[in-house]
Length: 327
Ligand SMILES: Cc1cc2nc3c(=O)[nH]c(=O)nc-3n(C[C@H](O)[C@H](O)[C@H](O)COP(=O)(O)OP(=O)(O)OC[C@H]3O[C@@H](n4cnc5c(N)ncnc54)[C@H](O)[C@@H]3O)c2cc1C
Image (cartoon, rainbow, N blue to C red; front, side, top):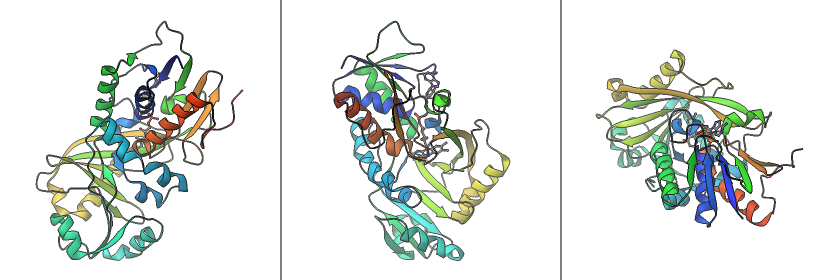
């Protein structure tokens, strides 16, 4: 198939590169900032590999396409924790839990004793919950670094500007920066916090349902937790607002008052690249194939989208999310 150039080394570009290299293809990546870092949306992700929980609010393909992500990340990056997801609600928000259960699959109901057995720090705080045993999580920053290192070791090259080569195919995986070519791409702002709270031990992501401020907490190990994430129709990146910090911390405190003693290590925000239907799409224009629109499912869907890119390049067949050819 010749040389394939990938523009963008976020989770989309790195996953496409990994899939192609694993199939024996030659790849070069171009990104003005090719090392994983806070310049890309992928840096701020929670790293939940939660196809069933996401299926509660997402379109049907998200659960189906996301099911293979856990094994893919294990195979290519490692560091996957297969401990499931715990979903909880305060007693007054019980209807939220019932609605979540009705709208998602892959869970079983828990009573207070079972919640305490899974997460002893939550003992006595919640009377019922849902457990999604087949879900997993990873540290996005470690996973991006692992893909980057393995690609380099396997001969993929990284460049800050297009090198003097003649690629046979170009994959545009620039995330929101590709709006210059994809006018219907929009940003959905997400804000997150990182806390250190050695007093708290959680083994798995915990989602606290709330009609206005849903929260998830992802353990990063060593008493560090990622709290996320707001969903705001805005492409504003950069600093987190006081309101969002207040709301995320209040929700964490409602989950477990011990979070009041936490150190606030980090705040961050970025805009998720999304198409109008909040699903990923592939589009072709000449020699360039655009892979974009991962929305809030970057780590969950990038493996499936990467496989579609590879199959399209290898066979010419149009995969499920291939749009019309652009003129
Ligand atoms: C707070 C938050 C929490 C999230 N949590 C989760 C989660 O738990 N699970 C999950 O699956 N997803 C999550 N997401 C969503 C996920 O982060 C995004 O879907 C994903 O990062 C999008 O990846 P991308 O590679 O398309 O874009 P980016 O990560 O933005 O990568 C684009 C890359 O293109 C590069 N670039 C820009 N311009 C150029 C150019 N001209 N040439 C070449 N390269 C260029 C940039 O430097 C960047 O490296 C979350 C997002 C946020 C904001």
